Image 1: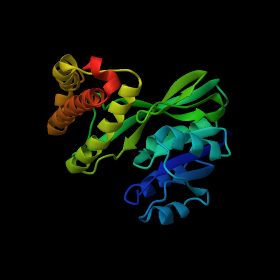
Image 2: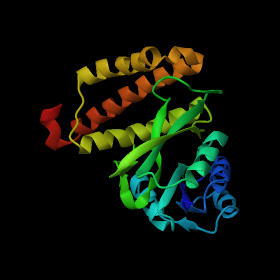
Image 3: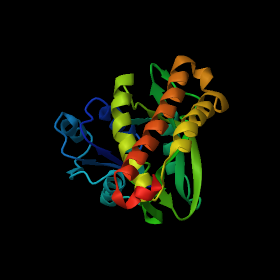
Image 4: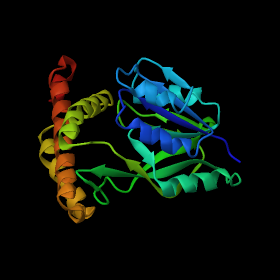
Length: 258
């Protein structure tokens, strides 16, 4: 029987974290929560599920998740965000996996499915959204920039078929609030890696993102929410590259890149 640590990082997630921890409790041998000094009821909820509740000043998604992973006592880790829930099918699949023999695989991708604007999004680039969330911690580490962090393993990887339910944005307003923050972080990551933006990217990339989501990935089959996801993804792309252009324009060392 494999031993499994459920790991979550959080900050002010009292509206969502109960469901995440409840689903982890069904499959994990321990739960570790690393909180960034929440000011709401998050701590009280977490302590109903675990005494491994730690608080640490926020240091970015990658570093915070790496720290949380190190706090676990099991080598196998199931890492969830506070707004993610293991579906009943995925819970059963994880329990079956725990009882199996070692198959030489060091990490498993889970298929994340997002609930947005009143329905599950089953098309666009939002689904299927494969994420490495079940892994042997000794086989890799968290990598990435300010956003889009992921656990990278050195060995073989596999997939589980059950959905990881993602309750990310409660409303369109919440999405737009997050858009400001995440496009800032993404632009800063691009800037640091030497990527630059100009009229071509600003003009061509957003329409391509819309067409890829709505036509190639059949977002039209998700109705108005699918249209919204496609349009918002294009808008996010435009703002990301516009902010990247603004960063370069404001840096005297990059004047030649404008």
